[in-house]
Length: 178
Image (tube, rainbow, N blue to C red; front, side):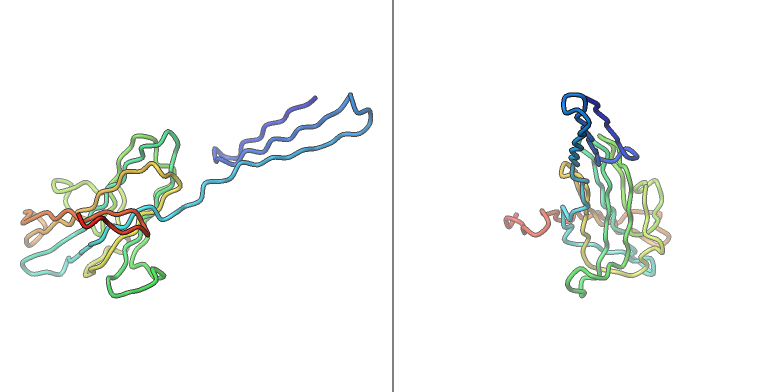
């Protein structure tokens, strides 16, 4: 009996090929089994996002933090939507990070802000200069932790005027009124 295991580029796609020979004479019976490739799925909704680089006295930026709590690498996509748009079809910005390592935390930002306020690992390109709405976080892993906050800053983004934590809810489920 020959057993061949093929793993393609570190993905979860695993193909087992069993060839039975010898006992069946000249007849070889191939049997193939495949494991399902993890698909990117919407996991969380950050209920409020604001990004304003044009404000004269108050500017803002939204930072969404994602922590991989699983034991596997995860692909993560953060989609920023205008609040007036419906059906989640046309994001203002899509930021994707492939292969987020286990136990690693990254910040996704609506625009660049100084590292002294929050380090941005991934940033919208082009940056969201004037937007208000929501964020959807998708991942190939279920075991991710998500938080979202809006930083309000003065001219030049040098001083923080306030920080607002946005509600994060399971996508499609709504919150419990908390």
